[in-house]
Amino acid sequence: MSEFEPKIITILCNWCTYGAADLAGVSRFQYPPNIRVIRVPCSGRVSPKMILSAFHNGADGVWISGCHPGDCHYITGNYYARRKFMLLKNFLEYNGIEPGRIHFSWISSAEGVKFAEVARDVVESVRQLGPAKYFIKKELDDNDLCSCLNKSNPDNNLAKNILEEQAA
Amino acid sequence: MTMNINQSDINKKQIDIINQQYTEKIRESAKKVLLEKKVDVVIGFKNGTEPMTTEPCLINKASDADKLIWNEHCRLNLANYVKGRKDKAAVVAKGCDSRNLVNHIIEHQIKRENLYIIGVPCNGMVDKSLNLKELKVEAESDTMQENLDLFPINRDMLQDNCKTCIKRNPVIFDEMIAEPVKEREWTKEEKLKESFESVNKIEAMAESDRWSFFNDMLSSCTRCYACRNACPLCYCPTCFVDESRPQWVGKGTDLIDVRTYHFLRAFHCAGRCTDCGACEAACPMNIKVRLFTKKLDKECFENFGWEAGMSLDERPPLDVYKVNDNANFIR
Ligand code: SF4
Ligand code: SF4
Ligand code: SF4
Image 1 (cartoon, chains in turn orange, yellow):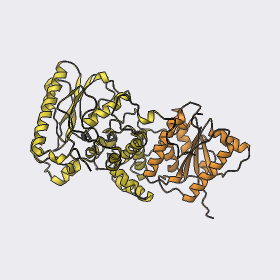
Image 2 (spheres, protein in one colour):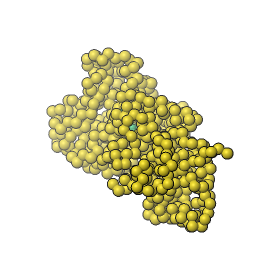
Image 3 (cartoon, protein in one colour):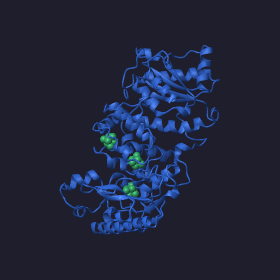
Image 4 (cartoon, chains in turn brown, red):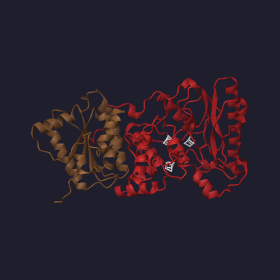
């Protein structure tokens, strides 16, 4: 077995997949500790800036998850997001990023089991690819990862960026 | 392979005559709309300070109309100079400029009633790097006319985007200065194969080769932002490259920052780019930045049947959705 433990930045919508992550935790479903969760209001809030920023800061993979089509809290946010995500995925791959580095899913807040399952698959798929090779600006410090939404951690670039932008 | 337009059929003499006719008609229309007070400003091209270059030119007096010209070096996109204008403007527009005017209208950057479009049927633009390199024009050549004598347009000399142009006549106009030119009719398959040939080649490479291909391509980029500034699509009050809190992309020529800049610039043009080539025409380093935007053009064409700027009645692909859009990449 290789020693490599991938670091995965996970961007979850507040209303569905974040709830699913909660449920998975409460229900004691096992999933690997490689994922670092960032909560956003809607999958439609995700911008390509965030994905590249994750890679800049040392993520080995990115996983984005929101509500099933038709279940969006804002009615249509994830429908718009779906078109953007397709272009984003294909454009990342065109730039040279390997297909298994970026993942998308729809997981409702009742699907704790699916959350744990997809988390395992995402981590495995990134583990197979090995450490990130492209778009890296700095190695991700383990301190950065304790809590991605920990505002008080001044080194936490990605979380800081997102928080600052939301405040602006 | 059927080619309806064969640029080599248009010989040098014809080009001279066309340029002269176009120039006269443009001046005439400019005078007319200014004298009739239909518009406050006319936006066209004038001769540049170097051979084989032109510059955008804004005139507001009929007596200045004789500054305006037309030739095969009008590579920039004049739709770039109307965004956000509150006065009434006349714009000299070839096919691609008019498609960007459509973009502006549907993106609410300008009002149709504030525009007077002087439509130019386009015979294509000469590639700037090619003609400088291959024709070895002396910098001190004195007049444009002398230089123009050197240039019959044949297909090999056209800039890349003109070779695959889908709309040489303006989409919308208030007057046309000449009879429309013949458009090339593409089937979907032809377009996917030929128009996106450069993209297809890159897609066929291995991942790591694609990564290094773009690294090489961008190694000379100086981050001057000419490609952004020449593009009519870029009008954000604060561009992401200037955002400092947070700073999503570093300012220097660090290769990752350069890659990030080009990635995001192209992504912001997704579903909007008309492949007008102004970005490449403006790049001082001759970087083929359209290789990025063209990939997203291809995605939008393949998946949403979309070609930007062709209709005032359709919303751009990222502004709409279908319940049954492709979802096979989502768990
Ligand atoms: S893209 Fe088409 S309309 Fe634009 S300059 Fe080239 S040939 Fe003319
Ligand atoms: S990205 Fe380039 S080709 Fe596309 S609209 Fe802008 S200037 Fe024209
Ligand atoms: S115009 Fe050319 S050199 Fe300048 S930022 Fe764009 S690609 Fe780089």
